[in-house]
Image 1 (cartoon, rainbow, N blue to C red):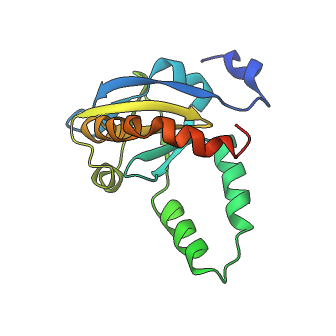
Image 2: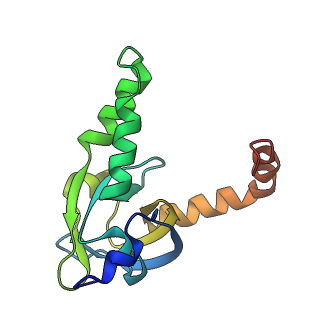
Length: 157
């Protein structure tokens, strides 16, 4: 970060992975893990995600997603709902000098973020979860991990 530090990743797709525990302060500010900051850039998009978490996209990845969503048929009700859901909750965030962002109350409410937060990397995006919801999700997913793995083998993975 700073200067021209981010130029080596220009044109490269972001790759996020890992899991960090952080705390939301009383003003709704959250530290973004240092490992994610350079790939996200100074400004990025935070929106409602699936499973009651928040999705965080670098501007370049958001632009790709936006193009894909523009191609969805307006005549399909599910497509309209999804686009409305994603875009109406979207906000542009900017890192402060301490590497924090301020999450708007509507997004904190949606993801049930109160204090303890888990921030994870998921390929081209970051996800922000209430810690207790993430822990429950992992427990449930772990129980069916092998079954899921068997099913996705058919997808060529």
